Amino acid sequence: MNLIRDLAELKNEVRGVKSEGQSIGFVPTMGFLHEGHLSLLREARRKADYVVMSIFVNPTQFGRDEDYEDYPQDLEGDQKKAAEEGCDLIFFPEKKDMYPPGYLTYVNVEEITEVLCGACRPVHFRGVTTIVAKLFNLVEPDRAYFGQKDAQQALVIKKMVEDLNMNVEIIVCPTVREEDGVAMSSRNKYLQPVERKAAQIIYSTLLAAREKIIAGERNAEVLRKFMWQNLSQEPLADPDYVEIVDEKKLQRVDQIQGPVLLALAVKFGQARLIDNLLVEV
Ligand code: AMP
Image (cartoon, rainbow, N blue to C red; front, side, top):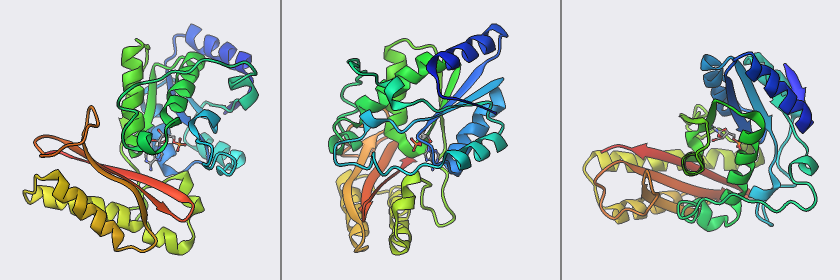
């Protein structure tokens, strides 16, 4: 497996791969890999001739008081894991090359970035779409893989690709969970053991709300309150938001009539965890 830092070297490699008529599958990440990331690599490997993973902790998607400086990293471990999954190339650029002095250009998707995580993290999605657009230009993938764990992010990327006529197919893969239901996340590393145990409340709340919908509850406000109360039973949980939105526009739903996304963000100590569940009715 190849590791490239330099942008010109990457472009050269991509040119070579393309000239041989090979297809490129791409998995963008911030590293500190876990099974969730690896499931995307495996999915990419199934179809692509050449698989690229990027590892870049992107400063523009972090707010001023967020964890950019502390974000966990383990390049050596990541290289081993990615190689085991048959990844062909890790692109590991430097901040100074992705955002050189005088950098001025940002990509912004409107409306669907202003709700859920966008309401709590105002610059976040602008940073995500900007870096993903740049990575798409550099890697020129045929397909790119994202996790349902970050449902809003996946939707925002799909909208950017559609609106900007980008030539890449976006594939969204299921959320990978620990045995107790907690969604895998690099940020789980921040959790103290008691917080890690308490974090089970996130998925159990989502499942309990889904049960209520299956049993016939259609009033979203009743369900939101139920989810909020459920989370409040856990003293270590500090919810940021609890929402029930439509799956396409992410607009708040009053009465459930079609598929909805149950989405929440909860802080445990210094870790802010997000999770969601798509419920079809
Ligand atoms: P990150 O490194 O956290 O930016 O995540 C990189 C990619 O992995 C994104 O597309 C995430 O949605 C995806 N991802 C993160 N956690 C999981 C998970 N538990 N299951 C599936 N995909 C995930």
